[in-house]
Figure 1 (cartoon, rainbow, N blue to C red):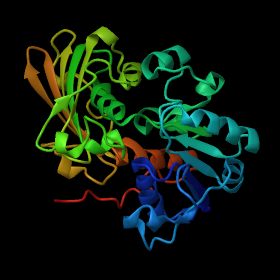
Figure 2 (cartoon, rainbow, N blue to C red):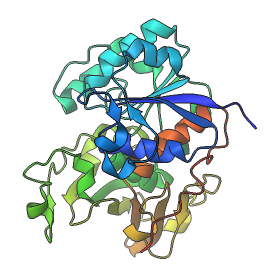
Figure 3 (tube, rainbow, N blue to C red):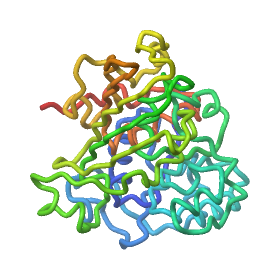
Figure 4 (cartoon, helix red, strand yellow):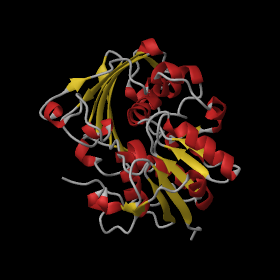
Length: 338
């Protein structure tokens, strides 16, 4: 058996941090070392996150240099811009010994100008952008095996990239409607995700201006004017369900493309029917691909935004970075059904 590693989380009380505790707890080769919250005082984790009462974990206010010193890997589950200073401090303290997996947006893009355009602020450590590998195992498996720094994709971005990638180089355009559950907006209520608003309701937002757009463009081969994305909030909590209408170059059919590209990737499944219930709580991404006529291909996809779209995928990256089996600790996270 491989050596056990120490893993810590900075930003443990948000939804992605909470989900990280769940998935790391299931990993036989991981010991959770430090759980750090920037807002909460040191306490038993059950005092702040009641469903984790009895888990044996505590929330700490440990300085970042100690977290880095004690950890083989540190997960950053922080809001946009917050990871930048933490990365500076950890790298300065450990001479790059401690691996970092950032679940936020700060290191997903390798261009500071694009970051400023989509996130509205200058990047304070742009010199580190090219050190991070984009954490999509379906595209960058080999690169993740040799890096110490991974930037987890956005949940929308990862789903739509997996849906579009088989058709790279053969698309004239793609139009996508993607419906996400309210957990994708985080724990703080706002006018869009507040329960009295989204219950029994659907509402689109940031049409063709979603922050994940540059991630999707980077792997799909499409230009911005060829891609339409309609992000929509749905009346459920976990999961993203998307439908893409792909106009192919030369009126091709689905059979003209290599639809087997994910056959060696353990968490991408081809399904006759795609549903949220089939992926909720798991690290699976389900796809269905069919012809729509006149050179159009219809792709449907779904993943759990908190697991495969965030914390589960981050642990998948960790497995590759430490030489573990890619599905270690994740293969037993079966979907919660019904």
